[in-house]
Amino acid sequence: MPPLATSLPSAGITANLDNDSREVLGSHGTFHVAPAGTVLITQGKPHGRLFCVISGTFEARRRNDSDEVLLGTINCGEWIGEVDIFDPSSAMCSVVASEPSHYWEITRERLEEFLNTHHAAGIVLMIGLASTLGRRIRGITQKLAEQSERPLKTAAKEAEFDESNLRSAADLATAFLRQKDYGRK
Image (cartoon, rainbow, N blue to C red; front, top):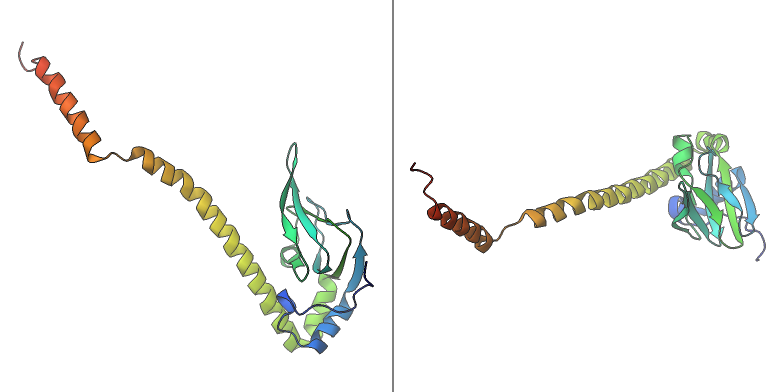
């Protein structure tokens, strides 16, 4: 594994920060080495931290009643934990290093210190966080919309009658009614 990183990448929420601002932000958090299997976030528990993957890969995993589902991978330059920074609550999934990796983390308190002392860089960082959250919400909304449309499309196809089917049904009903004289006794 390469030596421990000491600076944040210009990627994701820090893409628009200048080098000096990234250095100062980096000094408010801590850099870590994560052997494969290291758990950054545990499903069902709050964590109150924001993470940046410096190198390596992490996996987002969700445990259901009987199995564990891989939700996706998190690669170099990607950020994790931004939801819990704004809305501390139980994590919806676990995040685990799938290979030896480097990452940076900052607690909510240290992030607030940075924001309160570095206003211009803090605004840029908050816009980056808001953009990341917006993209993720839009992606989730898109998936939900696609899932809810599938049953509607299937039902609509099943309910479709082409004109020939409708005409055949009407012809059958007419033929049946002609066989019997329901109007007379």
